[in-house]
Length: 321
Image (cartoon, rainbow, N blue to C red; front, side, top):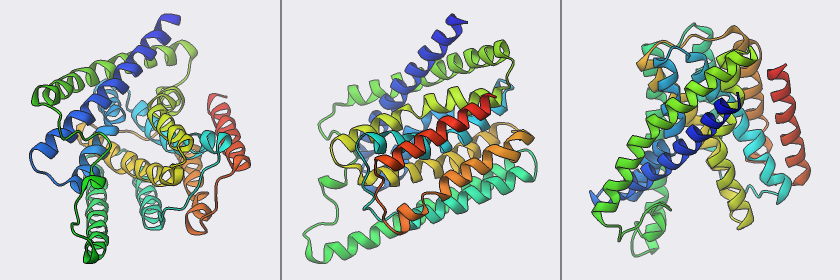
């Protein structure tokens, strides 16, 4: 069993490193090809940073353990709110000054669509197309809104596009060999890491007598949320945490609409009735509890962080029980 946990840890590390390399390579390749930084930020970075979760979901469906894919997405969304925001808020406190009302409403609508399709039965190809269509509409609306803001700001500015628009991963001086190397290592590492993590997680689930859905809700969900946790903690440490809420909202939208949308095209994803009785409602409640922080701009002080983290620990104990 120690060996299985070691393999799971190794698979997770490979996934995270490969995902980071893929993002760096894809961002710089896109910019070299002349794709605007705005489009890169809305698409390449969003897809690339969720590559580990996406590969895990696709691999789980192909390996006949689709419950792990669904559990991973639902568990990650719950962890993103209660754990990824809770721990930094508990340590540093989080500001919520950025305007995320529109994105929050999109996230809640996307969550309702995801849950509604779940009650209709397994996620099939047509459900995947609906989810991906909703994601495409949200991305289009986001691009249109950002362009409108940029045009307004450009009225008294010399240019609408400058270095501040570049994603953090962008390096204008990165040589071609390095870009291609990052892409190759990312594309090779992701499936290897996903396969290691899936196989070891299934073995752990069988050894402890729990379902693959439970492993997805706990071990895999927390593991794949570690990059977001590290990013949010560093942002709080540098006093740039006002963007943390927006990042979590965007990640949750992509998890539900993008990852399950793509995975549904690969194969049918049955829905465990236990998820519909409990876990999806926890996910929706965790998302809805962000409303006062979004609309009233409440700050997330240390007490809020303690409450969020305690709620997540209680949820995990209930799932494992």
